[in-house]
Length: 470
Ligand code: AMP
Ligand code: ZN
Image (cartoon, rainbow, N blue to C red; front, side):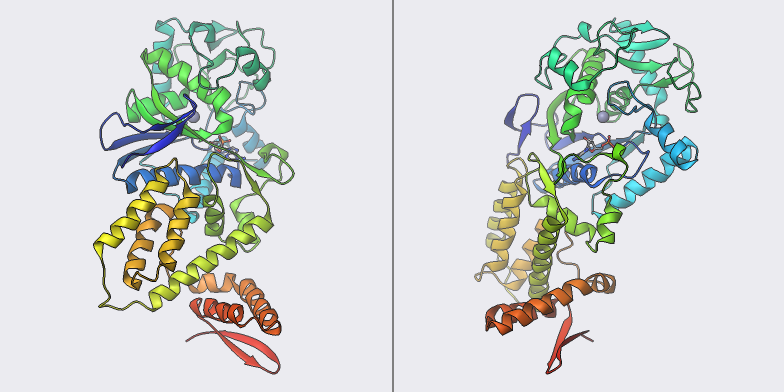
């Protein structure tokens, strides 16, 4: 089946043609491990996870490479502001190495909870310094660099089409990146490849290089590591939209400058998760993490479901009310699947033709630039289809869940039960209301829903109580 993706570089939806048939090389920019990931960052990683699983669903073999930025990322994506890792170390009175290790683990734990599969290769910037030095040397040989005040800069005027990815004029790029005046730069958009002379005199992370002891600029790590693990042409490169005008623009300049040919065939960018009140930012200190979501009695998969409901290329506004709605829909979905599982019978029919028809309907939606909302509609159709046996439904649900990763066929664990006490009380209240209004259909629906969650209701004159079924 053809797979279509929206390519930022062309501004069009395009048919994906991998360099090697059946194999897709995919690079996604990873986290800067100086603090917890916020739920906006996690939205982007969910999008990339769904992309990878969708490609696999339609038969591609995917090699996924993701970096861990543990050095070199300054507060602004250009070369200004404080060093993020040093900032984390000062905040917590730890070494930068301890900070990197701690937040890398925290990030991976968040990913596990969200059923975000680990990439084929996870590469830390600090373990690839030589690769970066080699790439800078290649750029130097080709005349793309200059040294000023001890730092090695990339000279963007030497690279034709510097602004192609962002599709902005140089003036717009300058305005957008709010570059600090740096006397050492020939063009304000030039960027550092190697610092030997930064304003951070006590920088702990330093390495020897042909230009002196120092550390790499942020952008060079992605070029160096992606080329190392995926070769000279990458099929898909992803990240959040904020990366388009600076980080990815600079990655293209570095990689294509060094390689002398086109480097990435499809650029895919996830839009931002925004708060009711505006942008989510770590620098403001108080930002939403997955733990905060859990403290509010939502499960990580409630959040995954919330993200799946909307298109990755559209901004998504987060609020706890909206997450509550998603949680309710997800619970309902799970309880319907539970009822199907309960009703399963060994000897039920399993018609391959019917199954394949639904599979291709699902595949068609995910292949349409990840139309996950429509893919979820196909799932609902399957659940409602009275022409399907429970076994056929179960087979399809388990199959779609390879992409959705919502644990649809997994029975609720005792832990889930405890977390759901609030939901149970709410449903009982809603059922009582429905009964008061003689809405027997809704009342029965709620009883069934609770039953699917293994909850038994006991009605008496004193009210409704519940217990976990033995
Ligand atoms: P960082 O750790 O800051 O490099 O960001 C990790 C990933 O999250 C990058 O791909 C960013 O583009 C992306 N990102 C940052 N903020 C948001 C947001 N509010 N919503 C979605 N993605 C974001
Ligand atoms: Zn990157």
